[in-house]
Length: 563
Image 1 (cartoon, helix red, strand yellow):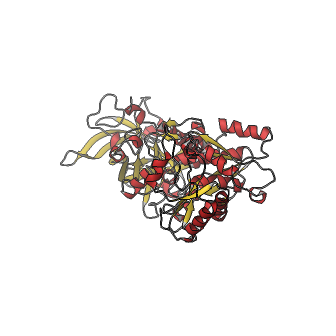
Image 2 (cartoon, one colour):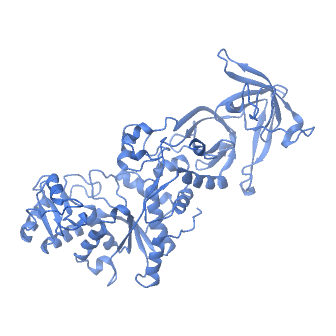
Image 3 (cartoon, helix red, strand yellow):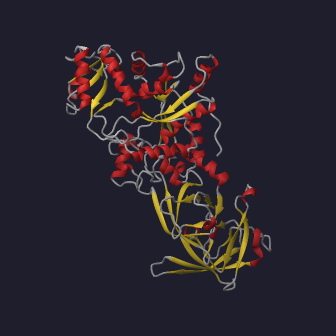
């Protein structure tokens, strides 16, 4: 698989300097998703950053599941995440789970308690918000803040033993309720949850919070650089505080004197015409607005994969948008151009007619047929050739015919001549209509002296249309996908569901394809000439039913709509 050159960005410069200056002997990163949903394009940026940086600098990268929220996590999500990372072409040094560190984390919590740096609190959520203060008002100490360490240890051990109900107690870090950084105002370390964990089972009824777990997991794994998005910038002080106040034994973090992980934040890249919020994605899926997490209209990685996006196109897209210190908004055209560039170079050309209109060539002998040898790719001889069958009856697309065509319509109409791509010139002599006036069949004649683009008298034929032999056509269902939303920023709307594009999916149940598609692999990509790029649907396509998805149009049609 071709890989995009690793881009220049500020994190690359910082980590390269750490190596150059001898601060680190190597770079060790991690990609740490929570297994509570399927990965989307925003995660791909983080994957390419963490794995790509380690790969570029000769370092290592772990895949770690931050699985501390048992109510929302599952084996399904974990396996889907693992598969998506592998599909993008990355290999992890270690497959890790925060839940594997639960015993260590519990021990570190006891250490903080014994040092007087953590206490058990019984304020409820509403009271805790009141005591925390605001950006302009300092917080107030909890009445329980000065419990003796021995009492806190006893309560915490009883929390673990399951003596108290959910919400009765929490364990909080004892830092500074007057800090201008609200993240430092005695954050919760542990809460009580009587929930089955998909890996740990029912061993625990107390679960550590993300901020406590994440930094310690990094340290235990020997991570050198903890890369995260900007919303964690205020949490960096807390990240460092936890690591500074626990005792990390050398055998847990590697070589003697090893530096603690360094957190570096980067900006999110929000893609127009999409939503990335897991809450919104879950709503789309559970309410049936899309057909599952792998619906090709979603920018989940499983959805993009089913739609026909390639790993190389996703990696190239991530390289194109770069890594910056600020959040950014990316035009959907950038993503679509990434897959167009990939498929333009690699997709086999075929004929596909989505809205078939039967055309009879009346002066072509009945029962006769022939084949035209054409290139599979106009610019790549190595992709070989194929044979396209031709006969008396063919299908053309309904959009390539008009009863009363305007002057600038260079396709077929009554009395008009066009060229069949790779074939002959034909002239429309008769139009057959049903009782409602719909055109159901065309009768044409062909000029046998016009094969291979030639004409007997040197006349120029402007119109060229694609076609499929009726006798050899493969019946198929073709799904044409478009952007899921009509508005560029649907996530900001109060009712984002109402902004769904009603034409985001069009299904053509009577499409006709040239027979060469039956010899292709299910992983192959195609350009339906003059139509767009397509792939087999990975779910519904089978031996008895050809189902294909449009990956992307040949050109950006949305640019015209927004002018």
